[in-house]
Image (tube, rainbow, N blue to C red):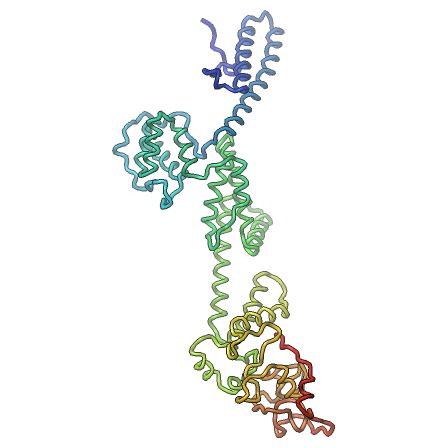
Amino acid sequence: MAAAIPPNFGGDRELAADPETAGLATALGDLSALFLQNLFFQRQTAANDDARARIDAQAALVRQTLQASNASRTREANIRELQPVTRVPAVPYGAIENVANIRMNNIPVFTGGSADTIDVISWISRIFNLAESRELTFAATINLLIQGSSKGAANYISEMKEENKTLYQIVQQLEMRYGSLTTIEDARIKCNNMARKPDEHLSDFIDRLRLMAKMACRQEPTEALRQRAVDILVEGNIRRVLPTSVRAALEERIMNRSLMGLPALSPRDIERECLDLEARRKERKLELKQMVQGKRHHVNKATLDVDSATSSSDEAEEEEDDSEHPRDFLINEIKLQRQRYALKGKPIDDRKVMKYAFRNYNQKFFGKNQGKQYPYGARAAQGGPPNKVEGYKPIHELLTLANVQKGQCLQCGAEGHMMRNMACALKDKPLVDKACAKCGTGLHSADDCPKVYQKDYKAPADAADKESLKKEPLNG
């Protein structure tokens, strides 16, 4: 009786049964396996060790050719047909055929429609776990797939069963029809370009990313290498979508562990740290929002309104019918702009803070009394000191009436502060409709003037002189 041919001499090779469907790589592999088998028989009849050594050297070269043909055949199969993400077992789970008494309480019914609460890959994985625990055959596993589905999906699986499709082919067709099965290269590109949806929780993004990463790494030879490749791909793309502050905090935690001599974080640990840091970030944003919106600050408005300036804060709130008062909105907006710089860890730029605060203020309250918009840099003075009959005057007219320039106080005429500021000596004094007759600047009466009498003061002669003054916008 002839000795059995070992696998290293092509003994485990299954030759192509149909030459018309065999490709070039398959034909070359079959020839290499037959040559190895012939070398095995020659080695059995070799006269001495030198002859056997030469045969072994030739066999080693032929094995390289056989490996190359197998790799080429695998690449052709991957290009020709998409391999499923789910790992289908090579042998049945057991010999049990009956699935009638198997309960599937924890597995959702899969219909193949948009209303399904589980994706097809996760559903197949749960079915396979149940089949493994019940030690089912391949035929019983297919029946379990039909039992756990309904509507279109159940009909589709039943049709493939009638066509004598194998379990591998059924899983492949299910993933292609109801899943996003694609090539390995396309799946890797989708992983690296996957965007996080608006208001999507980080854990939901990680689940979508991990599913696509499994698809990109499905051709790894072992489960350990596959899981390692998936973890690397997921970890890199999680960092990509993290907010800047969360990413910096994560790097700081990793560095601190390294400095303390602690073991490096595993991919699952990094996911947990990212979820924790993002939850803390949301808590800080909520606290900031409550701090900004919770407390009202009773300060002067950015625009001039003599009625609201002379009335109390309680009366002003009553006139606004419990809505947010403009002065409260402005001060809260300034605080909010400053807090944004603090959250980003950047130095506060007061010029930009005031610019954006006044821009938002104008967008919300522009034209509230006049019915037209005043963009940033040209806001109107609402309800200027003179007078209630003529209506509201722009800032350049107020500067003309007070005989002051931009940067000087309209009330006292001094430089370095604005009207109603705490630094103003006449902060609580009433306003008048012309410049002071004593000092010549500021809309205050001569009795309240804080300056000494100036003989060389000369008031504007007529309206022509007033119109000749340059109109300057009021900047925030």
